[in-house]
Structure formats: structure tokens, C-alpha cells
Image 1 (cartoon, one colour):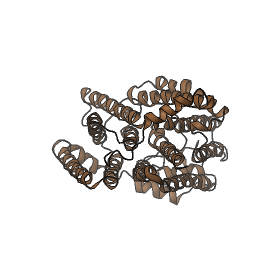
Image 2 (cartoon, rainbow, N blue to C red):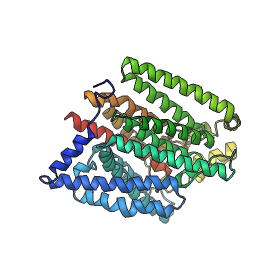
Image 3 (tube, rainbow, N blue to C red):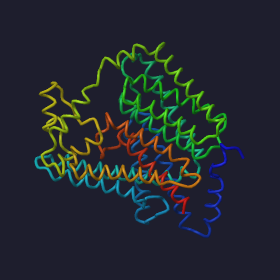
Length: 432
């Protein structure tokens, strides 16, 4: 067996094990079924959230399909589905604190406060669903890597085609569903694609078909990001691509390292030519916007912390009427809706306590990644860290809500982050 395939998982053997034990282990059989159907409905939700503009349509897969299955797994205390993971429940504790904490500040509309509670409930369900689904995906990593990457290709191509057909160029990119936002949309697509790329490293039995769709997906995601004219997602994409390529070199043999090096060099040259010849006007538009007030926004949040600094301003509060929002209006004459940074958003809305919970969650997952060992875990570690860096970069300039309704906020934070938790849990179980 060559160096590429020597550390691959045999997902067929794992599935055979599950099937062969179903008759003698009914709980295992039920857990596998729950994982499977949560995965199916979650995948449909993710797919159609990027493909169609009808909010009720793709949310139906979440509330009609995913929700009852997750609740049933919780009632059964089904640890096999992954919902008992300690990092997952720390995330649930953070979400619950945000929901309860929004009732602490005075003067907030009761209707808005209860809306946050509803958002917290649906966010928590989504987190548990991704935990359960990730355990199912990792039983057949090659299959689900192909599914996720193909979703990215299909939704990206459809959105690009609509963008060009309707004559939107050179305006900022706008697609369907979550892709309708020029910043959050590409970040969502990129997160879904990045999960697929990491899963490709769990099972190394790739074929020419896989390399073809990997290359096509990379090009599609890159074009979407360029057309969006969003510098944050573009930087995040390039950093992740570099980290992923470097990680592939580290875990490969000497001959394959040179191959990855030439592919990386070719990719850099292709990117430079693509930008220079076809998108030079978009590059000029990107640079003309400067820093889009980001440093000014972040400084205002730090200069004018919430009045209840321990508990925060409450997620139901309006940032534009906060002291930080008023300072921004005085300094630059602009009304900003949120802090444009997920960490600062956690501080502003949830105070020092919420910020502490959020940072603890991030740090604990990094510790678990670094502690991965064994033949498989140690080789997946750099790819997991690369995905974590992508999450941080995507939420550095635009993320702002730990608790949100079904929206792109879920896809470029909770989806990849919870997948990482599921990935770590899966490899930890292999080390026992």
C-alpha cells in the first residue's frame, strides 16, 4: 500500500460492523438510523439554503425534519449520536446564557427578547444536529466529501450564471438564499466547501473524478468570492488554501510533496493571471473601499463597552442606539448595525461572562485538536487547525451573532465549528 493510502479509514468495514451488529445491538441500530436521517434532513437544509430564495422551503427541512429527530435523540439520551459531547454542551450553555442574558438589561422590547429565545432554541438544535450528522458523515468520508463539494459547485455555478445572465456585473455578487448577501453568502459557501475538503483528507482513496471536482469547486468558490468583491472572505480563502496545501505537504511523502508544491505554485500563478486579466476592475473597486470602517467600529466597541459590562447589552438590543453606535455616528456619520467581529459581538451583547464562555469554547476545541494522537488523528491535526483558522478569519470582519435565526451566521461559524467538534470526537473515540 502506498504512502497516500496507508492511513486511510476503511469506511466500508465500519458500516459492515454497524450492520452486522444491528440485530444484537438494537440501541446501536436506532442510533445509526437517527444519525442517518438527521444527516439527510440537515444536508437538504444546507443545500436548498444556497439554492432557492424561498425561506420557508429550506427551513421546513430544519423544523419538520431535523428538529423532532434531535429532540428524540435528547429524550433517549442517545450518546452514540454525538449529542453528549462536552464541547457541544458547552456551546449549548453559551447559547442558553445569551438567551437568558438578554432579559437582564432594562428597556428592551419584550417581543424582541422572546425572539432571541426562539433563535437560541433553533441555534441549539442546529448545533446538536451538526454534531450527530458529522458522526454519520465520518463513517463514509469520501462519499460525503463528494456530496459537500458538489453542493458548493452546483450552488456556486447556479448563482454565477444568474449573476451574469441578469447583467449584475460589475455590481457586487448576489445569488439565491444565503448567497444573496455579498459577504455572508461567499463565507457560507466557503465554509461548506472547506468541510468537504477536510473530509477528503479523512479517506485518501481519491480517484480522478475526485480531483476533477476538487479543482472545479476551487475555481467556482474563488470566482464567487472575487465577484463578491469582499476582501475578508478572499483573504480567508487564500489563507485556508495555503494552510491546506502546506498541511498536505507535511503529511505526504517526499515525491508527493513536490507534486503539491508545483500544484500550489500553479494555483498562485493562475490566481494572479485571473485577477490581472479579467478582474482588474473588481480589484480597483475592492481597494477603493479602504478598510470599510472596520478598525473604527472595533475601537468604538472597546471604548464604549456596554453599561452592564458583566452581562452585556443583551442580544435583543439595537447596536445603532448603543454608546458605541452613537460614537460611530459622531465620528464618521454612519449607522452600523453590529460590531462586525464575532468576538467583539459576544462581548458587546453578552458582556465579560459571555465573552469568557465563548473564548473558553474556542480554546477547549483547539486543545482537543492539539491533543489528537495516533496514526490518524495526528495526520488530521493540521487540516483541523486550518479549518479553525478559516473560521476565525471569516468571523473577524463580519460575524456578529452567536445566536441567530436560520441564516448565513450559522453556516460560517456554527457549521464548521461544530463539525470540528464532531471530527475531534470521532478521532478521540478511535484512540480509546
